[in-house]
Figure (cartoon, one colour):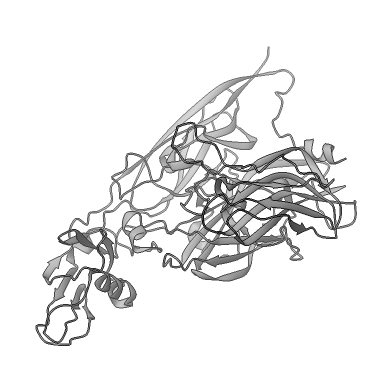
Length: 280
Length: 293
């Protein structure tokens, strides 16, 4: 009995019906959508109108790749996807009672669902769609997307010798270019480390010792920004280097820079399956 | 008979240098267990072995499920586990006795051996909805978002509730940390600041475990299982044997959930070591809809 249980597996690979002939067929699709992170729904991709197309898999690396850095990666971006077959059947849904259901509109994160990322972003084998789906001749497969924005984040990196600290805007796009960071040397003895935020201006007052020398380290600055809600709402900080305990020097008011608006995203993929011809 | 997906896991808090002797894993008293996969975690190439139902060692010495490198000097990499084929059937209330080695010069901490298979029940012994005699099927994914999973803590009774239109067969699962962001909107990526800066959509986790439960809250495992072993990641994180394409997490046999019924899962996270912060977890329950005809 155990052996039979183990061998048993629901077999959904359908046979070609009697009187028909299946031929392997690929349907490449191509969309260019805004990369702003907002939903784009009901994009149609029409199938040939000669015979039914049976979907058995999908290759969709452009939405499965691990985009490394804000639009600079050669591939696409992870995101939420919803696909509907030619009968209008949605192939995904959000399971309520999640509080975020209404936001996602049936779209689910593509990785491992419709667009396989695979290990380290590779997508060598495509992704099976099992059981297969029969699509009507001339019908349209509908795609909904909601990609992560590829807008660049404004940032500034301060370097003292071998240690650096990077300040990243907490908002996508050009708005972050208006944010500023300042590290103030109070010039007085025994001042405690503190941070003040006015609109988009973050000012860190560095700590000093009894001789008015700065004692705050790179790590101190990183932590006070990341753990102070008001400051973190404007920017985050991260350390780069192996000397986080190095004392940091003052910095005048400096704008973050490099924030840029999103750009269109190209999404290429292929539906894999067969065309089903009736034998004469 | 009824086959019900089940994981047994043996966790050893500390394996001393030189390894351990025979460690028994007590099986439940409700059903026999059919074992078809063994996977190690935090054991490395130190090796392990286990005893068959006849109390014979399954291998003559310690073995590993890691992939042996083909290049000199390269490190072994984690695999999906060692397949046990033909499978073993352990009697009700029996034990799987295991041995874990430690070829390093320091104790192995939190070593785990996952025994994956299924429990075998007599017909009628448990509620086990299954396929109708006549049906139409449609491949389908349910997405469940669990927002703000804390770095330390547990969230119980997370729910996958099936829609009313059709039954659902859960065949594989995927989970990734992901938070959408829009141009002009906040960088909502949460995790390490370095992760935020590199890619704001993803945080990361290491010590995240899950227990699947049916609608009566009967568990599909004896203890929390690492989430990458149940829900393989689309983007595997590093560390703790997670850098592996255990992808997707396969539930074999599949779990059949009738329309308007639910599958529950509990999450356990303990990510203090790297100052990790809350995550939005995107679960995808893959499988198919079953429409009665």
